[in-house]
Image 1: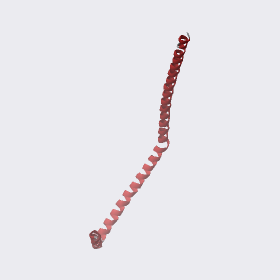
Image 2: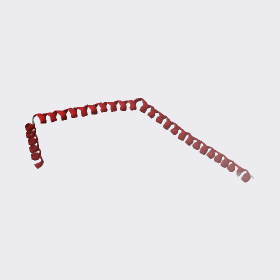
Image 3: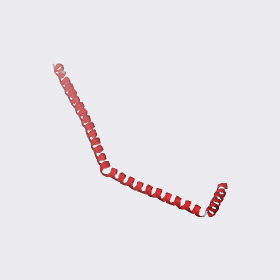
Image 4: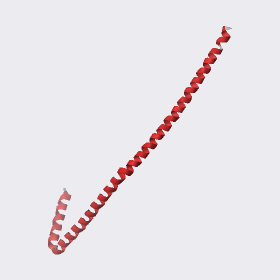
Length: 115
């Protein structure tokens, strides 16, 4: 009789173990789902923070820098036009001196090019 009474106990234990294992698997799956949801929520929150930072700080700074760069570029163009006009006027006023300077510059470039 003891052989027949001991058989149900391992089966009962096996059933308890199977139920416990199943419960652990469910908890792990639930934990995995919670982890995935938590990661997705964190990613969404980080994305929102980055967008807010871009809108609040980066975009205005870039806009300000673009405005400054445009001002510097306009100043450079205006200076280049003024200087071009000034050199052109100097050549018209003193053509022989301009030719002499051009010849000297060409001579120096030729000397440097040989080396």
